[in-house]
Length: 128
Image (tube, rainbow, N blue to C red):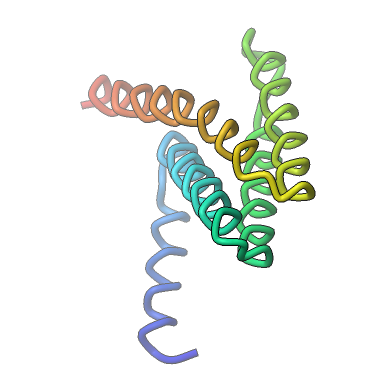
């Protein structure tokens, strides 16, 4: 690894370690959306290895999001069910090489992405 790559990695690591919980959540959603979009683009280009990499990473993010849910929050069961659905759909889209199915996951994630970003912004504004 060259010095520039090491510096970038160190910067990313520090950004993650110093992030607030709400910022970590929005970072995960940002990357989830990016992985789904890249996976779909790779599927449409018949770049199956790349598609597999992105879709599996998206599944890992969903697993992390799901594991962070607590039963204290009333909506956790419904959100966990959605995460389970997304995981199953991404697995099926990957196996079937179905870009349209991958696109349907993006359609479900976008409103969640926007909602969590809005919630994080509201928390930041309330804190200041």
